[in-house]
Length: 188
Image 1: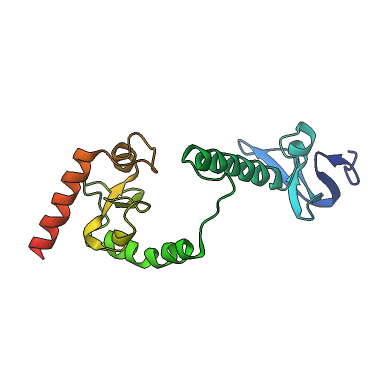
Image 2: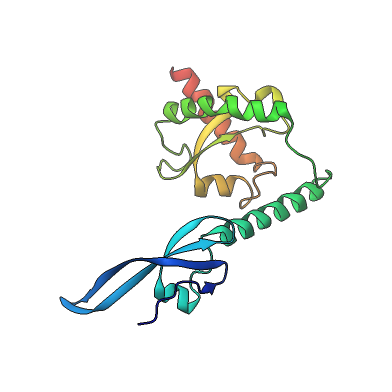
């Protein structure tokens, strides 16, 4: 078998054979799986199976995926900022960054208050702490416990008009959520 050392596949250059493993299918030896140490153009070193190199399944250490997802997110963010009437390059203010950091412990407290359960459908799963009155439009209520409730991902999606999280929540749902918070306060 010809070794791949020195060959280039996408952004990866094969440095050396790292290991070979016995390939066993249904209890019978079926040859070997070769794993190569590869140097990526970005400077990382990774281990890749020979068949992934030869078939083109792996062409980088993962940096291409990171780059493309970062680029897509940046493009979406710029487009969203423009749609909201802001300059495409507007960044978070230092105060906004600080507020978000301060919100994290309060968020944990709200999850605990609501027993780590969605207040809308009583399920668990991936949970969000939702601002009844939006973070951006009600700065004075950002940290008020009476403005915060726990919602699961699907309910949070529904409340925000099918996932448009930066839009106003549906008014009738906000009224019901305020009622829930008031009831929680009255019972405590």
